[in-house]
Image 1 (cartoon, rainbow, N blue to C red):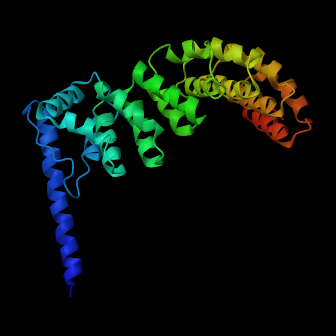
Image 2: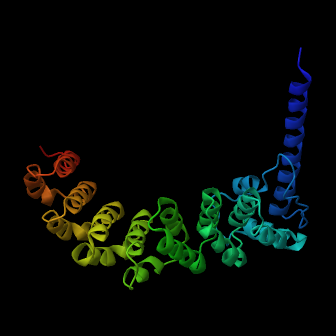
Length: 290
């Protein structure tokens, strides 16, 4: 026999499911242009508005008609203003949920307020802000993420969202400008994650003239991009005094299937550092060379 507590829990879950379904139908009606009206309660129990919107807008950019219709309906309902106000709420969960909705709808006008959350001491809040900026994209979002990297240092979350947010040529131009120590490696990594072929020359310049960290990350980024023209520079990096740079160059040459580097990689198997020897061995295996 079901206990009263269990029964109440089942009823509550069923009610939450009904509310989620009703909200999802509202959103789909707007997307299909059957309605332009929304009634959204951001604090409705058991309903994560941002999660539902993320399902609907996943993989879509800000220019997509579905995203534009949902954003317009949200603005007309007055909920967009409420979202921005909630970004300053005391409750971290309210700030996180608001950032999630803003990111799902690519609300570019809200970027300045979302950017302020990147400085939050609450990891959940700052991560939600970074994800929202990554989804929203554009120069202002990318610039806000770069400023956060300046303050906090290189972070996987910030770099991943910078890679997603950066518009054409943003990363390439920024790599050539004066930057604080953590920023240029982050830009190089983001360019590699985006497979930005226009970043090949700036990355080669960093391999040749950058700091140790810049050289290490730029080698890997060139491998991710598939930059065959960088093979001679990467072969030169196999002789770098820093073992991490040698290791990174070996990994990149393996990723590029650079058969012309086989002799240099064989020589690297006698390197004094074990990680370099392992990277060279793995690269030779990828080249199918013993």
